[in-house]
Image (tube, rainbow over all chains, first blue to last red):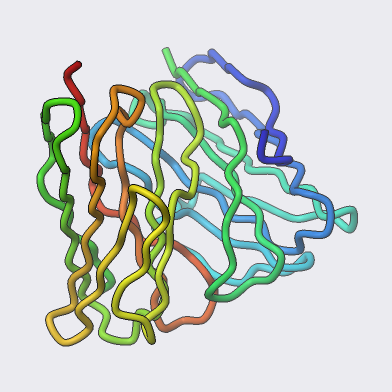
Length: 114
Length: 113
């Protein structure tokens, strides 16, 4: 157990719908990262938040958005879902927001879009 | 842009043999290189990491080497055991000082008993 929690574990929804994935970082960690893992794309960095503010963006679609709240938990919102959005979504947390910080991954949310 | 190439994509060895996975990175300013192990359906877990000011690091049966000039780094697992079977990912953190990980494509390691 890494100390990072993610809910829900599984999510099945239809195309065009909107979902919210939630992540709670380890106690004391200020940085939250979101990654998407699909079969053909591997692990792709989506977005990073540090102490409530966006720190870095990867190949995140405009249909996707995220935020980090004052209690440091983070939510990833996926809208206008397409079949290709089906993937495993991981969040990871780290003590700080820069290099040399081990990132601890949560158990992931498996999203299936039908 | 930032890119990490990982080879091979699959690797099958006999128990007790060594396994080597290689990665190359594109951003010469990358300064931190972690390796993650992911078992089926589980989260990635850090197994070893190396900083750019170090050429080699060992932890029991696992070692990582880094060649900054050639921009490549490798994972070495000795005396492999069936429980080493998993997908291994290399990663690099670039110059943006954000800590975002750029992952390689992964290597599926199978250790045959």
